[in-house]
Image (cartoon, rainbow, N blue to C red; front, side):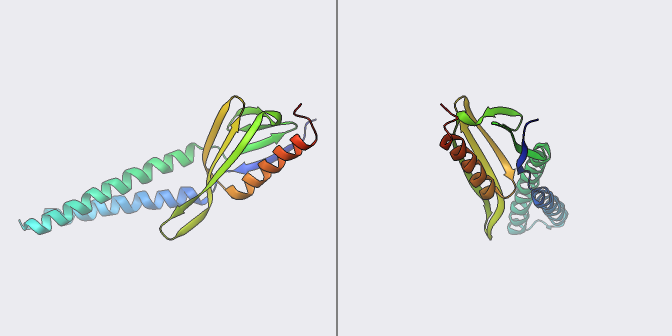
Length: 155
């Protein structure tokens, strides 16, 4: 029986963040449409509410897009099975790993604990967003890479 270890999971909070963003966008859209209907022909008021309307559409569309993308990301992103990892369904032997890169997600007010992870291997590379505790996952994959290379299994 092969040793199994879950290395990376999908962040749970990411769905809530983008759902709230989509709802805020819809609220801006509805608010601006209501006030635009009652602008009374004032050109400056119409321009202001059109700007809010465009911002609402943009926030709603981006919120829905990223919410759907987060929902399509599997719960278990990366798993170690013996001498290979399974990253988004892709079977990658540890001897073929070349590099692992991560980037934490951030906003205007700070950085989140989740982010994107890129695994480069001999056959290409695979990238995934919404990885929970992305820096810890990065460190674990680098440790596996070094452990595997240190034991000389890659030769």
